[in-house]
Amino acid sequence: MSDIEEPTNISPDTQPIPKAKNRRIAILISVLVILAALALGGAGGYKHGIDTRISAQQTSAGKIVAEQFALAQKDFAEKRYDAARQRLEYIIKQDQNYPGAVDLLTQLIVQMAITPSPTPTPIPSATPTPDLPRPRRSLKPTSGPMP
Image 1: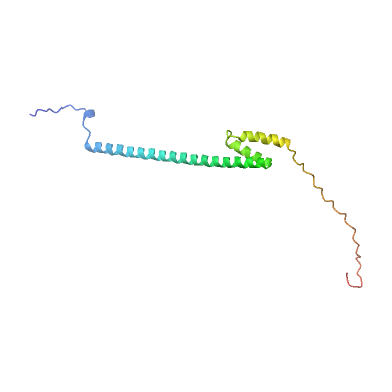
Image 2 (image 1 turned 90 degrees about the vertical axis):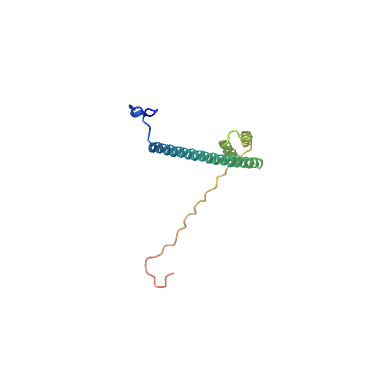
């Protein structure tokens, strides 16, 4: 007999797994790892794209607000108060903490209260002219040509 004795009572839980089953499990685990890596990579790329788009949108909105503030200052200097007020309200709606917007709006409201605004004068309506009476024609035939 050989020096190594094989156990005669091997329970089904302790029996070695066949190589084909080991290979299937290894392939399944590899496929799952690859799918997980693809999913994580896709999610990361998606998040990066969203962050880039939001950043570009905020930069663009910041430029628009700065341009509107410059135009509001110009309108205020040229005494176009209604246009300046609309611009400043837009700026405050976009960014409540925009530097100088609230102060300029306060100055604008004070200036609008001081400056008299022209009152619209009513446009007189046209009065209709009375209809003049027309000469009546006779229904009787005349002997000459019709006028």
